[in-house]
Every structure is written in structure tokens, then in C-alpha cells.
Amino acid sequence: MKLPFKPASKPLSYAALAVAGLLALPVATAGAPPARAAAALPSVNMEATVKAAQIDPRRADDTLTPGAEASVLLVERALRDRRLLDAKWVDGYFGTSTIAAYAKFQKSLGYTGLDANGLPGRTSLTELGAGRFRVTRVIAPGDRVPMRGVVVNTRTRSMLLEAERRLGRAFVLDQGSYNPGGDPTSAGTHDGGGAVDISVAGMDAAERTAAARELRRVGFAAWVRSPAQGDWPWHVHAVAINDTDLSTRAQHQVGDYYLGLNGLAGRGPDDGPKVTIRTWEEYRRR
Image (cartoon, rainbow, N blue to C red; front, top):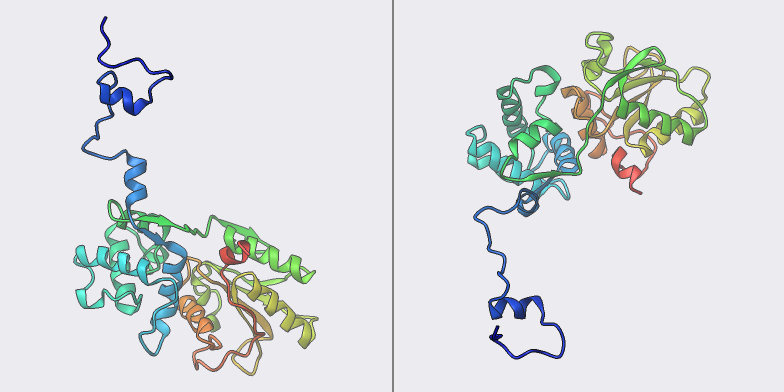
């Protein structure tokens, strides 16, 4: 057999063989492999998006939540294209109009109650992004579980246990989550997930403040509540930031916390210990 090329002193490369016609170069297919196609899609950072959905509706202006704009824009464009959000609200600001539009989308999927609260959840966000964007930094509240006589979810339980470890003492839980109507003075805060009330019986002022501080450090919006503020005994009220099961009232408290407020109806200045605000996921990545 006569070779179409002069033998080389060393093996020819794959490319050279292909040029010589002895090997076929791979032919690009019409559709990219699923993994490659998914990687090519833009990404929505779920942590940042959910954070914006708690903070933005509580702002007095249209300041954007840092790090969330690109992700929120992708979500808003998807809602717009489903005719759930007017184009004028596609602005990277997850305000009340976007919350309402997202709740409509959740209801269109058959969700009700907490699952249609306007906060993006893992399943609904993935569905909204099908073929448009991929979801990164995924968060989920986990299953509902008993903890010391109340009900919380697994994410909240992990957060409480870590705060206890840091504090060096166990908490007594007066009220947990998923407790609609359980305490009228709570104004719906505990109707969903992520909210707990902690007894401070036997604690002095410094110990109460220390408890609130450690809760804040692991990702709760937490305040020491006194009888002077409402019809309740001394306790620490804590709401897990970025819990996607939060009731509407609890969402508002988280937003107010980020804005330097006390989470009460009067929206007074934050009276709790000053710490760097972090979500549970951000705390774990430190």
C-alpha cells in the first residue's frame, strides 16, 4: 500500500492524521450534550434571590440588594414572558410586584399556602428556569421535625444547635414554627417555618443579649423582646434568614433586620447586638 504521505520519524499527531484523511474529525451535532447545554445557561443564585425577596419589599426606595440584581433580572424576565409580571417591573428589584407575580407562578404549579408565599423555592425556581437558567447556591428548609416540644424544620434545628454550641447552653423553646394561630400576639410570624421564641427565664440582661448575639451570628434575625414592647413575657424572638417557608410577616421581619430595624410593627431602630449579618449558608462557608 502506498502511503499518501512521507513516513515521519515519530508518530503523527491526531490532527495530522485527520488532515491526511486517515482519521475522521468529530462532527458537531445539532444539539449540545445536556451537561454542556446546562452549563451554557446563565445562573440564578438562589441565596441572593431569596434574600432580595425579603429585603426589597421593605425598602423605602428602589436600592438593589447587593449581589442579587443579575439573578433577579433573570427571574423577572421569565415571569414577564409568562405574562405574570408587567415589563416595567423587570428592574432587578424583587419588590412587592415581583413577589405577587412569583406567588401567581407558584399557584399555577398547583402550590398553596406556604408553598405559594412569593419566596422562590427550589422546585418552583427550577421549573421557572427550565431552558432559561440554572439554579445555583440552592437552599431548602428541609423536613418538619420535633424539637423540645415544638416543631421546626431541619435547617432551623441545625442553626439552633450551632447557636447553642457557641453559647455553651441549651435553649428552652417557647414556640416553634408552623404554628398558625398558636399565639395571637405573634401576628402570624410563626405561621410558617424558620421562626422560634426562646425562653430567657433565669437569664440576666447580659445572658439574654449573648443568646441573641449567637443566634444572629449563625443566620437568625433575632431580638430580645420585653413586656414593654407588647403583650408577652421576656423572650428572644428569632427568624431564620432565607428560610423559604417563612410566613409573610416573618419575611418582613427579616427585611427590616437587614435595614437596621427592630422587626416590630412600629419599625423602630434595631435594639439588638451588632454583628455582621449572615445567612446560615454564608456562616457555614466562612
